[in-house]
Image (cartoon, rainbow, N blue to C red; front, side, top):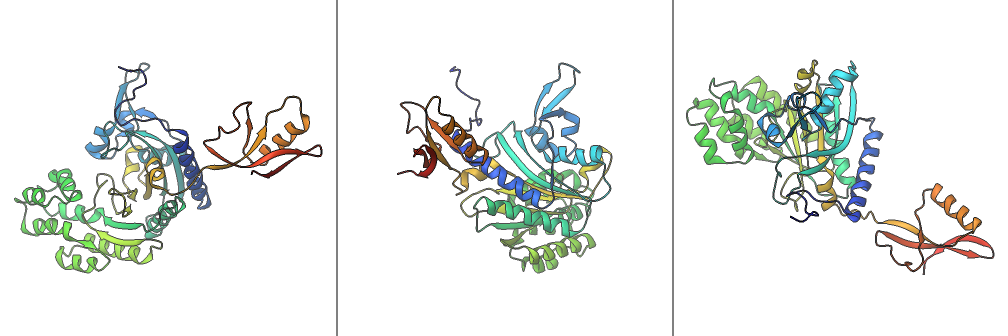
Length: 384
């Protein structure tokens, strides 16, 4: 085997892509900061019990595992940063009021999540803890849309769902909870034959309601249809009311309702949302409320957040991150030239010294200016 080959669905990030990813990372973290989010940096690996406190069997299957040679215990390489941030809020910070946290880091998956998908994603996201009201959901959704717009992605469609609908339906039938993950898979993929098979032995009310969920997709008017098709339960009524409120508040995106889009149902407890683009088959960002995750770390807190894969966003983003630069000649023993270059770099300019015989090796930068000597002084002028 060639020594330069990498594992399947693992790839190097080359300069042009890395430059774009870093540009987007900085833009998004600056925007998070402008909202008041504090950055945290969880470790790449933890004891497996901590990483798998939520997320169900899907997260377990996606997590790489290894044995710690110091303790003999099983470690996991994180496949999702959200549970780690919940641990930090619940156990380390232990604040009583609202806490806003953000992060950016690599996650690893044992299997790709789609055709041509990488198993090494760069996950970036933001979370709000300590507020159970819809104001937090609205803020996090708006921040997600801001993030996509900063990446030059327009015409975003925001799909809204609610984990409380499925939870209420499962409570109607004693046998239904054991079908939870199978039902979730069938609903998420809108596999109607499989859904019909799974619900065949359920009571009439939950059976008909569950089978109706895949059809409950469209603009906000779908919510009124849902009120007629779904059981008149308080939990379902609250869920539909929450979705109606949020659908009327979102700015900068087309809003759709999809009551079967329950990806992440294993740890989401309320409003769930996904951002889509017409040219991309899968969601480019996802989020939702997960009030129960912190309980595993000793303190349940209201929580909502979102995340996206920076590598995927960079791939489809039209942002041009090629940096403007100044081309400077290489000369020995020229104090004024060296001082001029240092001053320009201190001011934030990119100054590239052209090594002898390599004046045009500037693939990654647009050298639109040049440092030249005129009358004993070094000045910057447009490059011809």
